[in-house]
Image 1 (cartoon, one colour):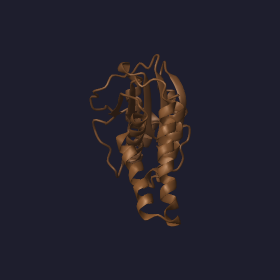
Image 2 (cartoon, helix red, strand yellow; image 1 turned 60 degrees about the vertical axis):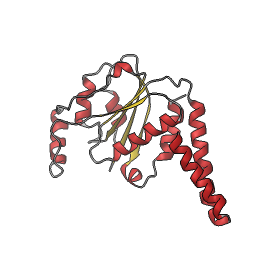
Image 3 (cartoon, one colour; image 1 turned 45 degrees about the horizontal axis):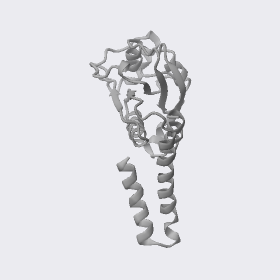
Image 4 (cartoon, one colour; image 1 turned 180 degrees about the vertical axis):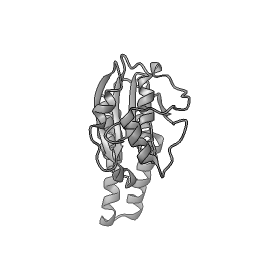
Length: 210
């Protein structure tokens, strides 16, 4: 929250210092920042709702979105917002990943992952982030999901994608047993790279935390 407020304050300082119509966009950005934080904050009904963000990221896009989600949810007043990154024991090779993943998807092979230090039984709200691999979640993440019991948990899926997201949200939900689902979102990888994804996260989080 302090980080977001400091950014808004800096923008307002620029407006006051520079003045004139040329700074209209800066002023609008500052007001939009204040509004986003205010709206999401008002939506929070239970600040003690422990939240876990679980994600897999190969290119960095899903990781970037995950970090933004953590900051946004913390800024909204949720006290506990932890992050768990899923890593395969044997990293993919950049030159062969497409061919290897395609075969893993076809054969339903789920690579072994490195040990994790979070237990989903300790959380109330769980967000699951993944890139879209042939219209489904990343294989290492699916393998992890199969080993978990989500009974009684509120779960929401978010995904980044390149060419086509496919049915990645539904496909990912199919691997999660016992949870109640909040509608997920997909974000274009090019929008993540260009930092054009924050607004959709703000809107989604506003509804998610109600």
